[in-house]
Length: 323
Ligand SMILES: NC(=O)C1=CN([C@@H]2O[C@H](COP(=O)(O)OP(=O)(O)OC[C@H]3O[C@@H](n4cnc5c(N)ncnc54)[C@H](O)[C@@H]3O)[C@@H](O)[C@H]2O)C=CC1
Ligand SMILES: O=C(O)C(=O)COP(=O)(O)O
Image: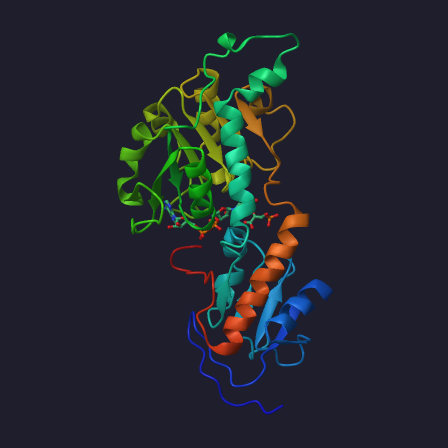
């Protein structure tokens, strides 16, 4: 194989030979196959890899990458742990891609499950130990005709919009730029997010964990919501002020919350959220391994194909935006 000169640039890389790709921290046949399917060739870290597919967290990430590495594919949609560990900052010459978007359908389905369970008063029904007619569940409602605020309408949010539409609900999208999101009745830039809290009936939080989104939902935001609102968080616990949420749920400032992610995480035994009936908690399992691994492998194949053929990579991390 002749290695000819190549001219990588952020987001688009051109290779005139089959790219060499190392898998770390351990060899993994699933990703060897995914790389092969995308037109890449698996090699070791010592074999001048052009790229790395990383399948674990940041702790074991090599302090020094071979100088030949131009692109690293990370295994999570949210990559704040790699920022926090200083891994991304330590390798400024490298283009990083996350798995943003790769798990969208699965996580959106989970968000819809939590939202429907809340709106249809499932926690109350599950707690009942005798036949209790729905008149005793004043919050039993419907998503039909509801407006759902999607805070961070990227991959997950966009996968959720048609699901909501099939139930007669409409999406009010919030993104960083405010560029229209397909299928949303309106898209609001994050700079105008305050107008969304009183307008939407319910919320799905699906934005990345960045300095800008830390405690995006606090006491003031909860107070601005309708008292019938359910807040679903499938993004990261850091986006919600947990103490303010516990207070709002206890006092029924809002109807309830469905949380796949919490702060702290794991949520410790005895935490007040465990004993609030209007808090539904799933232990960060909206994207379980049995679904995550094949979806990530597909994302790897897609990006290796793009890398090998000079197309823009999917889910390029923007270090200045923090995701
Ligand atoms: N619970 C779980 O197992 C999973 C959680 N996640 C989390 O969900 C997040 C979103 O995932 P994807 O939709 O795949 O990512 P994505 O990158 O496709 O979408 C992110 C969206 O958030 C928006 N955004 C960025 N900054 C914002 C801000 N300050 N305010 C409002 N919106 C903002 C962007 O404009 C974009 O629309 C990930 O960053 C990750 O933390 C992702 C997958 C699984
Ligand atoms: O990809 C993400 O961001 C996720 O949250 C998926 O779950 P993980 O934290 O990778 O087990």
